[in-house]
Image (cartoon, rainbow, N blue to C red; front, side, top):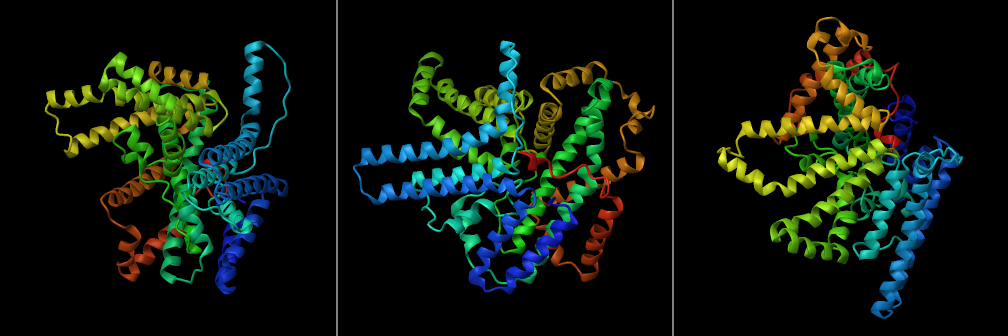
Length: 508
């Protein structure tokens, strides 16, 4: 059931109306039923994977708590808890690995050793990466004592399956999300208005901008041998628009739907194209994935004993300053390797992750030289002009990474990079080549105007303006003029009937 379908809107309407009509003590159970109905709509068999993750994680969490209650000797309790945690992680990440990466692994074995092993094409359950990471985050938090294990299996099932977020995040934390899911919620008209505004804004970004830009993206990236130069560059910029509007629009819809039920999800998207560095970009783009990796991978790795030994060796060989940074660089490379693997079972995604990890690691190593250069050239780091330079520099680096993300293969990404440079010419803006990519001049104008509107609103938000609150203070006529432009603009200018499909991040 696509988030942009009429079927989904009717589903949400029924769920929301019933939610506020039934006795409040049963609201969480109502959400659980509708979450499972939603997931079953994509295939009843897929529920088995969701139940598997829910059951194994719930059982592991309860076993961890029982070990604590037995008051065993510290060493014995630690060993028992570690065995339970390891088993829980293996059962769930193992399932994810088998379903998502078996084909990739077998294909590479065949390519390297010239074998001909056959393999079954697995159907990847919807949202499995999201609910697996969310569940394993909960299990690690229970292991570390950050939260108590949930005793009610049905309540825990709701935490894993809450339908607005299950397909594309955000990746929730038990201590922040569970309490909202289980508490009683009263109908709040203003919250409803804000939620509907957010949903409508998300639809605008998805249907009017993302799906329109996708036409050019698919035409060029899927037929990359036929294009070069500025047309490749246009396709990359269009992908930058598509992914931004698709992901942020999806988050708007998800967070708006959750808000209809009185639940505020963790922020997952914070105007990433205003980032001044790659590190800042990942603090703004898919925020919950970044914080998950930071808390459950980066810190455990960087603070591990073996990393401590690497740190000592690095200080002896490279000196204290550089030696202190090297373990952090290694941990970052591991994190972004996993980020790449998380995005998909292909070498292009691994390259995508390592590209970001290398830039962050090299930036950390060269930070002293960078600061020295700023001093030599008397550059004021706090000036608006320098911030614009940093934003543009980061935007260029991000767009280079999109070659890896969208190209059909790693070799195709490098080919497109090469032909972008070697075949570059501005003639495409004069000879009508842009019109061979599936859009006409009106489409390009709609994209330009739409992107400017999104940029203007994002700029205001970056300066601290709260758009919905600010809109609420405007005269009634102005507010409804805005609503009307969105309500009529989406079907009028959107690719409603020829949409390219669901949200991109739902495939992960």
